Image 1 (cartoon, rainbow, N blue to C red):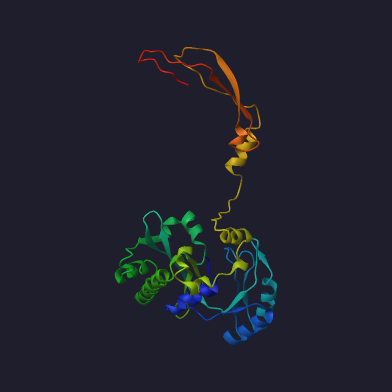
Image 2: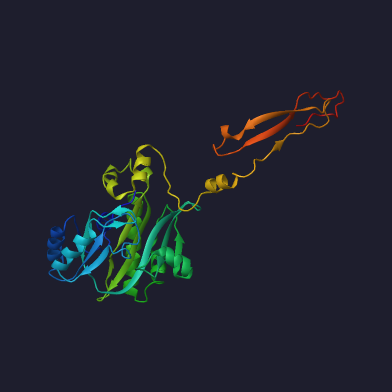
Length: 319
């Protein structure tokens, strides 16, 4: 189950991670009021709340210099369609002056069956792009779930991101708190991107993403109540209500290519009898359409009508 950014920020805030204030608006007037209250008449950021990536490239993240501009941006973003999902909420938060950006994330590695802590100095962009273009910039640490993130492990990774010892210690504390939140809510993914360094040298989680394992929802009904079906694809909602697992694929599937390629001449299968008393063969039709798609051709099967093995123990009837 995906959480909205504002929901993930609330969870991280409860575990002591420094997260700037922010509130959700569903109308332009609400966005104006929040901008005036939180921004003090200054700059704010208006961010679309949808369960897809690439919001900024789609125009779903805007910087507003005052409450009036925040209301104008909210009016344009609300109702916008981003990758097929309609924006119904926006997050309004004070703008921050950023000097550096990092990435900190927790995932579950299915192969090793362990939680993995990942950090990178290349924050502020999709971590998938960093992994594809500059994998050496990502540092990983597989954790023992019995102990979690130990202080020396967190500090060792933090020193790969920050030269300043004070900032490294602050980042190490954030990593430990992120693991605590990750474990407590039963998440399969929890990330801070970016973990920003402000002008005064402080660290702040400006954006957060959390994905809850569906198997944990029965134990956490308060988290199940956070599900927003209006922000999910209708096909996924219908599949979940039917008790099915739905995975959307893109491109041309192998089945459709096979159907188009088998529309030519029908193949012929033959079964030959060897070392049998009779070499006489009869022809029997075995339509493939009964076991495959209707577009499959009809195959012809040859089999022996009378096949009696000899008395010798070496003689066998093969088909």
